[in-house]
Amino acid sequence: MLRSLRRPIAPKPRPLERDEIPLLLESGTTIAIQRVRDPRARRIKLSVDESGARLTLPLRASLVSGERFLQQHRTWLQEQLHSYARDADAPTLARNVSRFLPLRDEQTALHWHEGRYARVVLEADGVHFHAPARASQATLRRALREFYEAQARADIGRWLPAYLPGLPSAPARIRLKRMSSQWGSLTPDGSLALDLSLVLGRPSAFEYVLVHELCHLIHADHSPAFWAQVQARFPAWRDERAYFHAEGRRLKGSLRALLVE
Image (cartoon, rainbow, N blue to C red; front, side, top):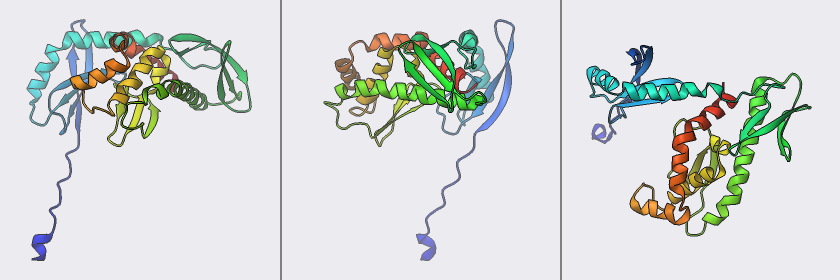
């Protein structure tokens, strides 16, 4: 009797399996592809980010089918890698060397000052970076991240009140963070996350992402009803999507170069 009441123990989820395989591109260059066997994956997927190329396989996919998929997408992969290579001129954060910082789709003048602690201030003539002479690179990056977060929250604070009417509720909270591929997300509890690199681009694109995620408070999917809500609140949303297609990788690469590398 007692034995029949015991709850079955759920099996532990299978871990990801990782290895690397070489791939010869049409340019004659051989690159290493990270191959990942993911129990959660439903289809074969090829992706590229700052760390390189990744091939994701579901459990039932054979290695041969994965290699065939790679060969079929060699041209696309080479184009993506070339786009990332163009980001080599991304901005850097070097004391008394860097003279500009990206902010709201502009290269804003950067002025360096010695100070008791690291802080970044936006003034009429540009960005002023105050820091002790011996401040570490990590300290400088932390101060810059706090500056960007403050600027992003100031933008959100200007836009948000106009879009709250008509929503079932306000966002539970808004977080700013680095996102590898997405620009925003909304959790079931109403918490909204936005990519911090949005503050580097044009403000209208940032505003569109905010509106897009707010509309998910009404419709959690991307149904025609959802896009009707977006259209009603932000008619120029297609222009902003085109902007992200053209400039999105540059924005994410710039933020990574300034805060991580």
